[in-house]
Length: 347
Image 1 (cartoon, helix red, strand yellow):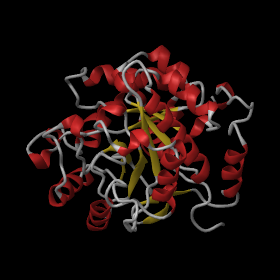
Image 2 (cartoon, one colour):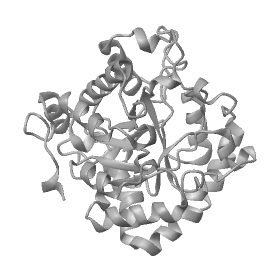
Image 3 (tube, one colour):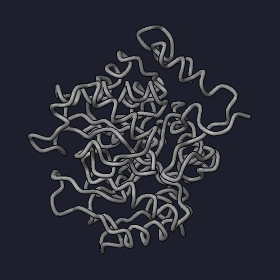
Protein backbone atom coordinates (compact mmCIF):
# COMPACT_ATOMS: atom_id res chain seq x y z
CA UNK A 1 0.00 0.00 0.00
CA UNK A 2 2.58 2.55 1.10
CA UNK A 3 4.72 1.93 -1.97
CA UNK A 4 1.86 3.15 -4.16
CA UNK A 5 1.57 6.53 -2.41
CA UNK A 6 2.43 9.50 -4.59
CA UNK A 7 5.37 11.52 -3.28
CA UNK A 8 5.50 15.24 -2.60
CA UNK A 9 7.06 17.67 -5.04
CA UNK A 10 10.48 17.30 -3.46
CA UNK A 11 10.51 13.51 -3.99
CA UNK A 12 10.43 12.84 -0.24
CA UNK A 13 7.39 11.99 1.90
CA UNK A 14 7.72 15.22 3.88
CA UNK A 15 8.26 17.51 0.93
CA UNK A 16 10.59 19.87 2.82
CA UNK A 17 13.05 20.38 5.68
CA UNK A 18 10.43 21.39 8.26
CA UNK A 19 8.66 18.06 7.87
CA UNK A 20 11.94 16.22 8.27
CA UNK A 21 12.56 18.08 11.51
CA UNK A 22 9.05 17.20 12.73
CA UNK A 23 9.62 13.53 11.93
CA UNK A 24 13.01 13.47 13.63
CA UNK A 25 11.58 15.17 16.68
CA UNK A 26 9.48 12.08 17.46
CA UNK A 27 12.27 9.52 17.03
CA UNK A 28 12.52 7.25 20.04
CA UNK A 29 9.25 8.46 21.55
CA UNK A 30 5.96 6.61 21.94
CA UNK A 31 3.19 7.99 19.75
CA UNK A 32 0.99 10.50 21.58
CA UNK A 33 -2.05 12.59 20.70
CA UNK A 34 -2.80 16.00 22.14
CA UNK A 35 -6.17 16.14 23.92
CA UNK A 36 -7.87 19.02 25.71
CA UNK A 37 -6.55 17.67 29.01
CA UNK A 38 -3.01 17.09 27.74
CA UNK A 39 -0.91 14.54 25.83
CA UNK A 40 -2.16 10.95 25.83
CA UNK A 41 -0.63 7.77 24.40
CA UNK A 42 -2.24 7.24 21.01
CA UNK A 43 -2.65 3.58 21.84
CA UNK A 44 -5.08 4.49 24.65
CA UNK A 45 -7.60 6.29 22.40
CA UNK A 46 -9.58 3.12 21.77
CA UNK A 47 -12.58 3.42 19.46
CA UNK A 48 -12.61 6.89 17.91
CA UNK A 49 -15.32 9.05 16.36
CA UNK A 50 -12.90 10.78 13.97
CA UNK A 51 -15.03 13.86 13.19
CA UNK A 52 -17.75 15.35 15.33
CA UNK A 53 -18.98 18.48 17.07
CA UNK A 54 -19.95 18.99 20.69
CA UNK A 55 -20.34 22.79 20.70
CA UNK A 56 -20.95 24.92 17.61
CA UNK A 57 -22.27 28.30 16.51
CA UNK A 58 -21.97 29.51 12.93
CA UNK A 59 -23.92 31.90 10.68
CA UNK A 60 -23.93 29.18 8.02
CA UNK A 61 -26.30 27.13 10.22
CA UNK A 62 -28.51 29.75 11.81
CA UNK A 63 -30.77 28.39 14.55
CA UNK A 64 -28.83 25.12 14.79
CA UNK A 65 -26.23 26.16 17.38
CA UNK A 66 -25.56 23.99 20.43
CA UNK A 67 -23.56 25.25 23.41
CA UNK A 68 -25.14 23.42 26.35
CA UNK A 69 -22.62 21.52 28.48
CA UNK A 70 -25.17 19.35 30.29
CA UNK A 71 -26.76 18.19 27.04
CA UNK A 72 -23.34 17.49 25.53
CA UNK A 73 -22.38 15.39 28.55
CA UNK A 74 -25.66 13.49 28.28
CA UNK A 75 -25.02 12.82 24.58
CA UNK A 76 -21.45 11.61 25.15
CA UNK A 77 -22.44 9.33 28.02
CA UNK A 78 -25.15 7.80 25.85
CA UNK A 79 -22.52 7.08 23.17
CA UNK A 80 -20.10 5.69 25.76
CA UNK A 81 -22.67 3.01 26.56
CA UNK A 82 -22.24 1.72 22.99
CA UNK A 83 -18.43 1.52 23.30
CA UNK A 84 -17.28 4.93 22.08
CA UNK A 85 -14.03 5.88 23.75
CA UNK A 86 -12.65 9.08 22.12
CA UNK A 87 -13.87 11.99 20.00
CA UNK A 88 -12.11 14.28 17.51
CA UNK A 89 -14.02 17.56 17.87
CA UNK A 90 -13.62 19.51 14.64
CA UNK A 91 -15.15 22.91 15.46
CA UNK A 92 -12.52 25.42 14.28
CA UNK A 93 -11.76 29.09 14.94
CA UNK A 94 -14.77 31.31 14.28
CA UNK A 95 -17.44 28.62 14.60
CA UNK A 96 -18.29 28.79 18.29
CA UNK A 97 -15.40 26.67 19.54
CA UNK A 98 -15.48 26.31 23.35
CA UNK A 99 -12.21 25.01 24.77
CA UNK A 100 -13.41 25.59 28.34
CA UNK A 101 -16.50 23.44 27.85
CA UNK A 102 -14.54 20.77 26.01
CA UNK A 103 -12.24 20.48 29.01
CA UNK A 104 -15.17 20.24 31.42
CA UNK A 105 -16.89 17.61 29.28
CA UNK A 106 -13.75 15.51 28.93
CA UNK A 107 -13.16 15.54 32.68
CA UNK A 108 -16.82 14.85 33.52
CA UNK A 109 -17.16 11.91 31.12
CA UNK A 110 -13.62 10.56 31.05
CA UNK A 111 -13.69 10.86 27.26
CA UNK A 112 -10.47 11.94 25.53
CA UNK A 113 -11.27 14.84 23.20
CA UNK A 114 -8.93 16.04 20.46
CA UNK A 115 -9.92 19.63 19.61
CA UNK A 116 -9.36 21.60 16.42
CA UNK A 117 -7.65 24.79 15.48
CA UNK A 118 -7.61 26.15 11.94
CA UNK A 119 -10.39 27.52 9.79
CA UNK A 120 -13.50 26.49 7.87
CA UNK A 121 -14.62 27.34 4.31
CA UNK A 122 -15.78 30.85 3.45
CA UNK A 123 -19.49 30.17 4.05
CA UNK A 124 -18.87 30.08 7.81
CA UNK A 125 -17.37 33.58 8.03
CA UNK A 126 -19.42 36.75 7.43
CA UNK A 127 -18.08 39.61 5.35
CA UNK A 128 -15.60 41.65 7.36
CA UNK A 129 -14.43 38.78 9.55
CA UNK A 130 -10.75 39.05 10.41
CA UNK A 131 -9.86 35.77 8.64
CA UNK A 132 -10.30 37.48 5.25
CA UNK A 133 -7.79 40.24 5.98
CA UNK A 134 -5.21 38.28 7.99
CA UNK A 135 -1.94 37.38 6.31
CA UNK A 136 -0.99 33.74 5.80
CA UNK A 137 1.68 34.22 8.46
CA UNK A 138 -0.83 35.52 11.01
CA UNK A 139 -3.30 32.75 10.21
CA UNK A 140 -0.53 30.19 10.73
CA UNK A 141 0.75 31.90 13.88
CA UNK A 142 -2.67 31.57 15.52
CA UNK A 143 -2.90 27.90 14.57
CA UNK A 144 0.49 27.25 16.16
CA UNK A 145 -0.44 29.22 19.29
CA UNK A 146 -3.64 27.18 19.74
CA UNK A 147 -1.57 23.99 19.67
CA UNK A 148 1.52 25.03 21.59
CA UNK A 149 0.12 27.47 24.19
CA UNK A 150 -3.60 26.75 24.42
CA UNK A 151 -6.67 27.60 22.39
CA UNK A 152 -7.87 31.18 22.27
CA UNK A 153 -11.07 31.41 24.37
CA UNK A 154 -13.00 33.63 21.92
CA UNK A 155 -11.99 32.85 18.33
CA UNK A 156 -9.11 35.35 18.37
CA UNK A 157 -11.46 38.34 18.42
CA UNK A 158 -9.28 39.80 21.19
CA UNK A 159 -5.71 38.64 20.50
CA UNK A 160 -4.61 39.75 23.98
CA UNK A 161 -6.98 37.35 25.78
CA UNK A 162 -5.30 34.69 27.87
CA UNK A 163 -5.32 31.26 26.16
CA UNK A 164 -7.36 28.45 27.65
CA UNK A 165 -5.33 25.60 29.17
CA UNK A 166 -6.85 23.24 26.60
CA UNK A 167 -4.60 22.83 23.55
CA UNK A 168 -5.74 21.92 20.07
CA UNK A 169 -4.50 18.65 18.60
CA UNK A 170 -5.60 18.79 14.95
CA UNK A 171 -5.83 21.49 12.27
CA UNK A 172 -8.93 22.14 10.18
CA UNK A 173 -9.21 23.75 6.75
CA UNK A 174 -12.03 23.94 4.23
CA UNK A 175 -12.88 24.39 0.57
CA UNK A 176 -16.05 25.33 -1.30
CA UNK A 177 -18.12 23.26 -3.73
CA UNK A 178 -16.12 22.42 -6.87
CA UNK A 179 -13.57 25.19 -6.24
CA UNK A 180 -11.14 26.61 -3.70
CA UNK A 181 -11.52 30.36 -3.21
CA UNK A 182 -8.53 32.66 -2.85
CA UNK A 183 -9.23 33.13 0.86
CA UNK A 184 -9.61 29.37 1.39
CA UNK A 185 -6.35 28.78 -0.44
CA UNK A 186 -4.56 31.14 1.94
CA UNK A 187 -6.05 29.34 4.94
CA UNK A 188 -4.98 25.98 3.49
CA UNK A 189 -1.45 27.35 3.13
CA UNK A 190 -1.58 28.49 6.76
CA UNK A 191 -2.79 25.03 7.81
CA UNK A 192 0.18 23.45 6.04
CA UNK A 193 2.58 25.82 7.80
CA UNK A 194 0.93 25.07 11.14
CA UNK A 195 1.25 21.34 10.55
CA UNK A 196 4.91 21.58 9.55
CA UNK A 197 5.67 23.57 12.71
CA UNK A 198 3.71 21.40 15.13
CA UNK A 199 3.31 17.95 13.56
CA UNK A 200 -0.49 18.03 13.85
CA UNK A 201 -2.57 16.50 11.06
CA UNK A 202 -4.64 18.68 8.73
CA UNK A 203 -8.27 17.62 8.23
CA UNK A 204 -9.92 19.40 5.30
CA UNK A 205 -13.64 19.92 4.76
CA UNK A 206 -14.52 19.03 1.17
CA UNK A 207 -17.89 20.40 0.12
CA UNK A 208 -19.94 17.43 -1.14
CA UNK A 209 -16.68 15.53 -1.52
CA UNK A 210 -15.31 17.75 -4.30
CA UNK A 211 -11.82 19.18 -5.01
CA UNK A 212 -10.02 16.28 -3.35
CA UNK A 213 -7.03 16.12 -5.70
CA UNK A 214 -6.77 19.92 -5.86
CA UNK A 215 -6.62 20.19 -2.08
CA UNK A 216 -3.99 17.45 -1.85
CA UNK A 217 -1.91 19.09 -4.60
CA UNK A 218 -2.00 22.43 -2.79
CA UNK A 219 -0.95 20.97 0.56
CA UNK A 220 1.82 18.85 -0.95
CA UNK A 221 3.11 21.90 -2.84
CA UNK A 222 3.39 23.65 0.53
CA UNK A 223 5.61 20.90 1.90
CA UNK A 224 3.09 18.80 3.80
CA UNK A 225 3.48 15.03 3.89
CA UNK A 226 0.58 13.07 2.42
CA UNK A 227 0.15 11.07 5.61
CA UNK A 228 -0.60 14.31 7.50
CA UNK A 229 -3.62 15.02 5.25
CA UNK A 230 -7.19 13.88 5.99
CA UNK A 231 -10.01 14.67 3.54
CA UNK A 232 -13.44 14.84 5.18
CA UNK A 233 -16.89 14.15 3.70
CA UNK A 234 -15.67 12.31 0.60
CA UNK A 235 -18.52 9.83 1.12
CA UNK A 236 -20.94 12.59 0.08
CA UNK A 237 -19.50 11.97 -3.38
CA UNK A 238 -19.47 8.14 -3.18
CA UNK A 239 -17.17 7.48 -6.13
CA UNK A 240 -15.05 4.43 -5.23
CA UNK A 241 -12.60 4.88 -8.11
CA UNK A 242 -11.93 8.51 -7.17
CA UNK A 243 -11.51 7.57 -3.53
CA UNK A 244 -9.03 4.82 -4.39
CA UNK A 245 -7.03 7.32 -6.49
CA UNK A 246 -6.82 9.76 -3.58
CA UNK A 247 -6.02 7.06 -1.04
CA UNK A 248 -3.23 5.79 -3.31
CA UNK A 249 -1.47 9.12 -2.73
CA UNK A 250 -1.08 8.26 0.96
CA UNK A 251 -3.93 10.52 2.10
CA UNK A 252 -6.48 9.43 4.73
CA UNK A 253 -10.18 9.55 3.79
CA UNK A 254 -12.72 10.43 6.46
CA UNK A 255 -16.29 9.22 5.97
CA UNK A 256 -19.02 10.76 8.13
CA UNK A 257 -22.52 10.13 6.82
CA UNK A 258 -23.72 7.10 8.84
CA UNK A 259 -27.36 7.70 9.67
CA UNK A 260 -27.71 10.62 7.22
CA UNK A 261 -30.50 9.11 5.18
CA UNK A 262 -31.07 12.46 3.48
CA UNK A 263 -27.82 11.83 1.62
CA UNK A 264 -28.17 8.09 0.94
CA UNK A 265 -28.96 4.86 2.81
CA UNK A 266 -26.31 3.32 5.03
CA UNK A 267 -26.17 0.37 2.63
CA UNK A 268 -24.49 2.61 0.04
CA UNK A 269 -21.85 3.74 2.55
CA UNK A 270 -21.27 0.16 3.69
CA UNK A 271 -20.59 -0.89 0.10
CA UNK A 272 -18.25 2.08 -0.36
CA UNK A 273 -16.19 1.11 2.71
CA UNK A 274 -16.21 -2.51 1.57
CA UNK A 275 -14.87 -1.48 -1.84
CA UNK A 276 -12.03 0.59 -0.37
CA UNK A 277 -11.06 -2.15 2.07
CA UNK A 278 -11.16 -4.74 -0.72
CA UNK A 279 -8.94 -2.51 -2.88
CA UNK A 280 -6.29 -2.48 -0.14
CA UNK A 281 -7.01 0.93 1.39
CA UNK A 282 -8.42 -0.10 4.76
CA UNK A 283 -5.44 1.63 6.36
CA UNK A 284 -6.51 4.94 4.77
CA UNK A 285 -10.02 5.20 6.25
CA UNK A 286 -11.42 6.75 9.42
CA UNK A 287 -15.09 7.29 10.28
CA UNK A 288 -17.03 9.89 12.27
CA UNK A 289 -20.55 11.27 12.38
CA UNK A 290 -20.01 15.04 11.88
CA UNK A 291 -23.14 16.00 13.82
CA UNK A 292 -23.08 19.71 13.00
CA UNK A 293 -26.72 20.60 13.74
CA UNK A 294 -28.69 20.71 16.98
CA UNK A 295 -31.35 18.53 15.34
CA UNK A 296 -28.86 15.66 15.01
CA UNK A 297 -28.53 15.10 18.78
CA UNK A 298 -30.75 12.90 20.92
CA UNK A 299 -30.10 15.17 23.91
CA UNK A 300 -31.75 17.97 21.92
CA UNK A 301 -34.68 15.76 20.89
CA UNK A 302 -33.30 14.83 17.48
CA UNK A 303 -31.20 12.11 15.89
CA UNK A 304 -29.37 10.01 14.91
CA UNK A 305 -27.20 11.00 17.90
CA UNK A 306 -23.64 10.10 18.85
CA UNK A 307 -24.70 6.56 19.76
CA UNK A 308 -25.51 5.79 16.11
CA UNK A 309 -21.92 5.11 15.05
CA UNK A 310 -21.25 2.15 17.31
CA UNK A 311 -24.81 1.27 18.23
CA UNK A 312 -26.19 0.95 14.69
CA UNK A 313 -23.66 1.46 11.88
CA UNK A 314 -20.62 -0.47 13.09
CA UNK A 315 -22.46 -3.76 13.75
CA UNK A 316 -23.51 -3.70 10.09
CA UNK A 317 -20.01 -2.71 9.00
CA UNK A 318 -18.55 -5.76 10.76
CA UNK A 319 -20.76 -8.01 8.65
CA UNK A 320 -19.37 -6.39 5.49
CA UNK A 321 -15.63 -6.13 6.22
CA UNK A 322 -14.94 -8.17 9.35
CA UNK A 323 -13.73 -7.39 12.85
CA UNK A 324 -10.08 -6.76 11.98
CA UNK A 325 -10.89 -4.18 9.30
CA UNK A 326 -13.31 -2.40 11.64
CA UNK A 327 -10.66 -2.23 14.37
CA UNK A 328 -8.19 -0.78 11.88
CA UNK A 329 -10.65 1.93 10.77
CA UNK A 330 -11.92 2.90 14.24
CA UNK A 331 -8.85 2.28 16.43
CA UNK A 332 -5.54 1.86 14.62
CA UNK A 333 -5.93 4.46 11.87
CA UNK A 334 -7.08 7.36 14.11
CA UNK A 335 -4.27 6.59 16.56
CA UNK A 336 -1.75 6.90 13.73
CA UNK A 337 -3.30 9.85 11.92
CA UNK A 338 -3.84 12.10 14.95
CA UNK A 339 -0.52 11.29 16.68
CA UNK A 340 1.90 14.21 16.94
CA UNK A 341 5.63 13.55 16.84
CA UNK A 342 7.56 14.64 19.91
CA UNK A 343 4.72 14.56 22.44
CA UNK A 344 5.06 12.53 25.62
CA UNK A 345 8.14 11.07 27.30
CA UNK A 346 10.82 9.37 25.16
CA UNK A 347 11.09 5.64 25.73
